[in-house]
Image (cartoon, one colour):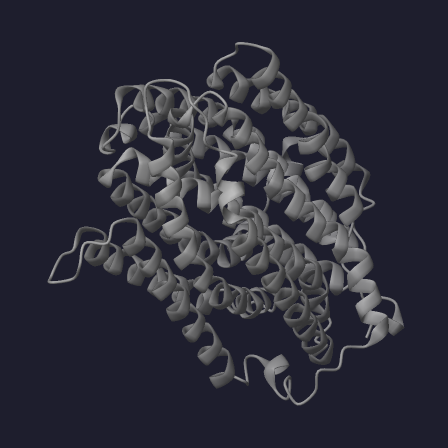
Length: 465
């Protein structure tokens, strides 16, 4: 196959970057401020950093459940918009509300009832670092306040997801920028007690995040309702709660594997961290530092995945199946290039970033080693992320479920569990083994994308709405 088939025209990249850059900017700013947030808490102490890290890992499962639920309906939103069917977008928007509020209620109840036992799963003796009781104390403080921010987060995702699916990526980006700046300002004031504010430490970090969540939510909601000409779907959307039963069935059948995939994948990541944590609380702190710097640069290729979902959805909805397959091949190649760039940046930062934290040499050494492993895995993750969103764009959610969450629970988690419980392997070796296993997915992803059976117009059945 000629290399030209993997390279697009100037017009192709102009369209790609036009959608990707606002998403990239929003994600980059969000991750950069998360980096600063993490460093600020890390400057307070190791136990505080570990407590916040554990809670954020639990909340991450909820965030991805919301993402999966909204994305399942979003597959239809993007294709309805491709057909200029605003009523169809309106129905999917309502569906998002119902499923998101259901998840919000369930997650809040679970975290209130079982928050402490869940946190305790990550607290193990080992190494020379960390006070387990103190870590639990800070984690409980952070969780209690963070629960308040789940509602505005959920509302933001319902609105922002729909805006992106209909091509308005800038407003969510702008709201995200304001939100993260708000978070940064209040973090500075409330963690360290500057300008007359009390020094609240971990509680201050949680309060700042909640304030930022409400700020971002308000901006997205207000913009949408004051720009009805650009957002046709919002006209009369709350005059009725009606969603056609045929569409509910289609979204449920297509979207349930996607939501389940995101939930199980996130739970799998939480389980992997639990396996690493068996080697001691120092590993949790080191993973937190490593993930922070890795996530900061991973936005380069993760943003390509979100872009693929939008652009391929538009092409498939407009009936351009052949063009979608050609675009997918070129966008996957572009994602791989961005993964190589991200890997170089992560590796360059690895020796220096852990030195910023107020922690032990044991944690810093582990963090450097883990970050270098993540850098080596970045191109693989870039390729897999693009392949995943390609398969998902045509509604092949059962395949993506097996490809993504299925692989984590059938390969990654059992491998890490066995190595952590039945061998003396250090955490770094367990992490390396789990990352190396991802190479098996590369071959599978290549085969599934090349087959082209994912390229389907989900809205072509007349009773879809």
